[in-house]
Image (tube, rainbow, N blue to C red; front, top):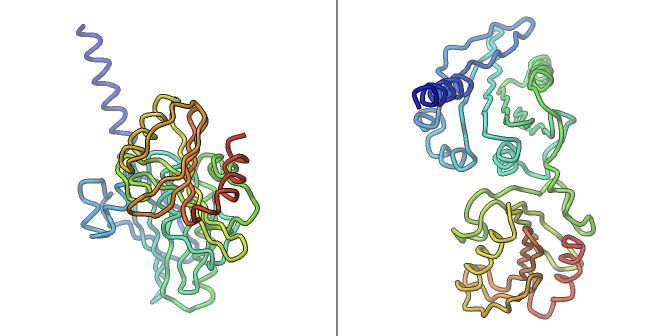
Length: 282
């Protein structure tokens, strides 16, 4: 028993050490690196980003490392957010992404905005680089820093594999997101990938929820059916048209551990919903 306790304590110490260990941010030629910032953890993230902290915490935030690179009056600031896994890093990244940004081959995906911000994610990290300088050399240095850091982050540069489940027809580019909590505003709906679609004059959203087991899917479906007053049919692979008080008409379908929800279509557009759900659940 004593050995087991010591082993457990050792694992805890190792875990804490790995979570809190410093990230070695690279030097940038011609710039002075300043690392006076503390390492921000879940308990003090509000000290740095105030009200925005709740969103980051919802995506299993672990720690944040901040540094500045100065060259005269020109300053480049970098923020490296570590999350529990690539899905969570993609999730927080996707909440701040717009399809209008200039996308780059950077990490798993990245972009540059018109006001000097460079954001990307890779593995479990979400990196944000910003400069308010309009100096062309500074802007190029910021891009160089982004690529250097992306190469230093271990792991594969890939998008979440679940995104490949979404049908390509009508899907809006670079609008996919991951929602960790309260999908469609319901506490019992969690862990969903979302993509937006356009078909003619119709604009709608598809959500894919991946559960660990079919039993978990059944519990989620039962909770949703109960909340909308819909009677369960008892089928293993079934489909419903729900009247959701928050979201209007919602099409629900599932197979084994996968649930598909479609919102934004009307009741008489069931054929469109069926076409998409059939492709996802085939």
